[in-house]
View 1: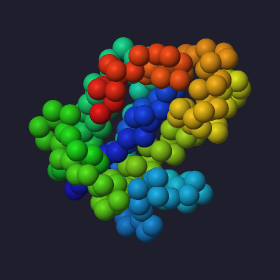
View 2 (view 1 turned 180 degrees about the vertical axis):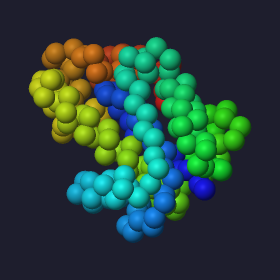
View 3 (view 1 turned 60 degrees about the horizontal axis):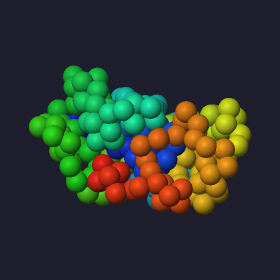
Length: 190
């Protein structure tokens, strides 16, 4: 059986990285890359995926991303998923263009649009992360995380300018709008 793997939260300046792995047991109609679906459709599919799949979801907080780096956190999350689902899956496929040095991990660009298991993983990761950002928004009302989900929108950057960063922010992600040097960080994002 195939386990599809995808992530949400690679690029935001706040909030966790979320990686999901999914093995589909029963056909699920309407799957696609989470970015191609409306929030309402993602939420409906989330429940169907949970009911009709084996899955594992890994959250990595902003502090750990700052300490270990994004690539290391992605690799660790993928490895955890592979370990948890190794009895059920005979192959693992990640959306993207790298295996992060994991020998048995296959990868494919735009797999989240073409492979149902990866589409399902994309949806689980995105919905899980969005729900988390909405939940913490109550604890950090100055940042409106429920609106931008931690991405570097103009309003979000303005909030950081006014209030500084919270413990949910990634301090290693430098912001040009704040006059921070972004040279070193861009290499670690890709």
